[in-house]
Length: 277
Image 1: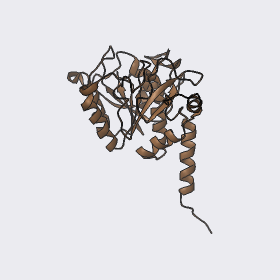
Image 2: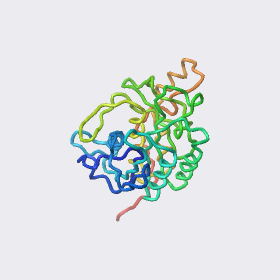
Image 3: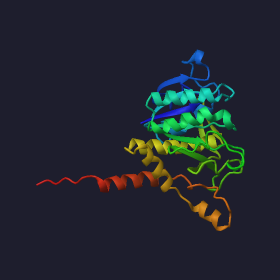
Image 4: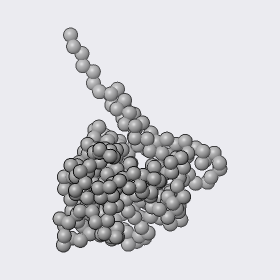
């Protein structure tokens, strides 16, 4: 399966990640479309969570092929046009899953980006998007593109090591949201191991889960459905039992193993039987 990282690029000399890379582009600076090596570090960290092949770290979907869309510069800044162009390139390369660990308050200026994501859903891709790190509710200060309401989009909130929402994580950005670890996450910074926190590092875990399901044969809608329906909603139920008027945990905590097992079991039951004499 093909996963596209829409970020600051990837360190092409990282031996745990480079074997997975099949193509890249730079849409932040179209005059240097082939210059998609990571000059910030963020993109390498994110990509490694999905496809790293060890020996120090192994990603969620280490057998996936990696497409790299560099849409942010060395300061991790960019614009809607560059991000949209990167998404279009990912789709043109037949990516099945996109990870977008970026965002901001875009308002009407983000209309083109919203339309691009909505269109991408019609092309059979799934997209994990970081909810953002302002510690606010989506209905109060929406974060684009995490709040884009599209069938293939999952907004991802950050949990701490106790399975509780971190104080920095945005939440309720999207009716289709999951929670994933986002505090004290190990990843590659260049060729070294670093520790990071943020919803940026939660989203790739969901992207990896989507990639595994797509690799098992799941369609775009099935991959999203199985991740959402097999999430651990323990924290969600505790939250609601305390009388909170908004559900900040969405569908609950990511459980890739449960989703993949459920998909495998459902399709094993539906597979035709063969008999030998």
